Structures are given as C-alpha cells and as structure tokens.
Length: 485
Image (cartoon, rainbow, N blue to C red; front, side, top):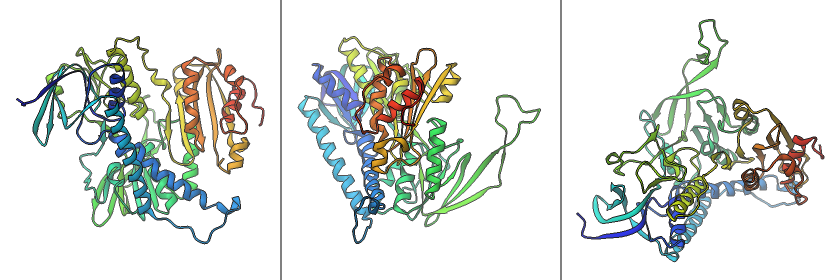
C-alpha cells in the first residue's frame, strides 16, 4: 500500500474538457476536489484535438483568402507557405491555453495529481506513475472522465511514420505531397481540407454512403461537390482492406455498388455488388475512423457497471449503477464532443452539490466541422425527423442572397436549412454550410432550449448586414416565404 493517502469530497480521473471543467465548478461550489491526470490537463481536446487542429486550419484559411486577395484590391509580390511556422504557432497557442488551464485549477483550489488513476472501489482511487503507486485517494464521489483514443483496426500496421492517427499527424512539421485519409467524419474532412488547400494530393475513403454521414444529406452532398471541385478524390461505400508500408503506403480497397433488389433479397438488407480490388498509393495514410473510449487500466472489472456496447451507461445526472461513481464525456457515448463532456461534467457536479439539476437534451448539442465552408448543425436531420414520424416544413436560404456573405466573397454554395414541426412550428433541426456558421449555433441551441418556434425566430430582430440574417430568412421560408429571395 502507498505511504501517502488523502481524502476528498470529489476525485475526478481525467483532466480533459469534461474533467477539468467539472473540477473547477466543484471547487467553486465549496467541494474539496482532486483531479488525476496522467498526461497534461486539457486532455485530447487541448493537446491533440480541437485546439491544435483549429490553429492549423486557421492558418490554412488565411492562405486560402490570400490566394484571391487581388479580388479585394490587395497585391503583393509573392505568396508562400511556411508549414513549420504553422506548427510553431500551433504549439504556442496550445502552450498558452495549457498554462491558462493550470492557472485556473490552482486559482480555484483544485489539487492536481500527475499520474494514472485506478479504482480499487467506487470510492477509492490509486494514483500510479510508471507502475509505482504514489498516493491513495478516498472520496465521497468519483467522476470518470478519461476520454477516448483513436480507433486503430488490428489489421492495420499503424507505425506513426507512414500510417498515422490524428495524434501523430499533428506532430508532423511538413505537410504531405500525397495522403490517403480513411474516414470522412469531422476529423477526416478537416485534414482533407487543410492538406488540399496547401497543395497535397488528397484521397478520402469512407465506408458509408457519403462524407460527414451524421449530417443532413443535403449538407453532405454540397460539401462533397465543393471538395471534389477542388480536386479531392472521394471514394464512398469503400472499405480499407489491406495496408502495406514501404517508404510510403500502398492501400488495397474494395468498393460496393448498389444493385436493384432481387426477389430473394430480404427487405432490410441493402443489396450490393463488389468491384474488383483496387490499389492506391500515397506518402501517408491517416486513420480517421473514429475513436474508442479510454477505459483500460481503470479497475472497472471490480465493479458492477452497465454498458451499452463499449460505452458506460449512466443516469440523467451522469451517475453509474454504483452510487457516488459518475461518468462523463467520450466514455458515455456519442457525440464525442468537448462541449458535451463539459456539460456532462457540470451536470454531475450540480447533482453532487445537491442542486436542482436539469437533464441534458442531447438532441440540442451543436456540431461543427471546421473545414471551409464550415458545416454546423443542431437537432435532427430531415431524414431523422421524418423517420421519427414528424410532419415537417423545411425552409432554406442560400448565402448567395446574404449581403454579408457577398461582401466577404464567402458564399460558395452555402445555405441555411431549418426543419420544423408543421403543426406547431417547433424547431427540430438547423443545418448550415458556409463561412463561420458554427458561430450561429449557440443561438439555435438557446432557441430550442426555450422551446422556440420558427414564427418566434422570424419575429426576432437580427443585425444587418450579418451572416446570421440567413437564419432569419430561413425561418421566414418555413413560416411563409423568404424576403430576399
């Protein structure tokens, strides 16, 4: 047993955006709190995910805009890319935010233990480092917030040199001449946009029917058209069969082609025929095939917990079947988003503090893919709303008719789409593709939280000229008819 021990009201294992936010709020509420983190506070989001990728994407966006600077009356002698400086700026931003997070934890009196947390019971945590037990923590309550790691299929030789995860590729100080990206969710699409803009030959492989498959079909189709026009090769309904590494990568793929159903085909099966095997070559392969919850070495096998697939199941206040043991973030299921983890952390802490706690409306969580044009959404897609049996009305407004988008020259095929319940005008979902449309989604989240209707949205006063007016126009399109169209 360890020589040291300590007692807390709350111990949190994992210092990502779920864990550290929960720790700060708990300390603010007078709860004696400890935070256990094996790497750096801030987690994947700060060090290998949200923040570093967005820094690189911002630099790429500036470069993209400068490519058409002459349209705006700006001239210069030579435009070039210094990708190592992209990397250095990324490191600088991450370091600054990391130091800020450390400061906030210290300021609020959270005691941080550097090491790997392991449960010996629902209320006891061992903190280990390099296999050595440093301290044993006892707590009235424990929150598990260990996040997720990139999913790497066993058959794929992920060497960190030619076959890379999203963690690996952020360490590269040169951008690839050619790259194959396996997976067309948000991570895959963001890197595809980044490298395509910088001049790389990019090929995307996606097993499902379209890119960003969780988004509205009309949005997905529009982004696919834009990326294809820019020279990105997109292969959907395509599986990654085999990878060979030899000073680059050689990838074996297999594509599926829909075929008409035969009389013997069962109703629920999608018939397809397979093409012959094909091969692709590139400098690198990026695995962007999803993430899996980080639950190993936590000691969960000692406890009686409920799982749904690979995810821990919790109550509406994030408590597991073990009283006083909570779970938040990526380990509890999709969507695997930083702001979802933070919100779950606040929910758990609210319940621990004995406050009245409102359950999270998961349908109301905004999603953003930070390519250009950005894709953002909240709520149900049109297909989801129809499958749930809603009788819907849809209103759309193209950004080519929005004055701010025209001023900025940033309206390429962009639009806003609102899906509403036909009878009451309840907002079921909002979807957008265009410049910085992610910034619009907090307002949609608020409107749906307050059970707002499209009629109320169409009566709201929006500033002019702004991109947000596209939401106003789409609301008018649901209620009766858009004005500027």
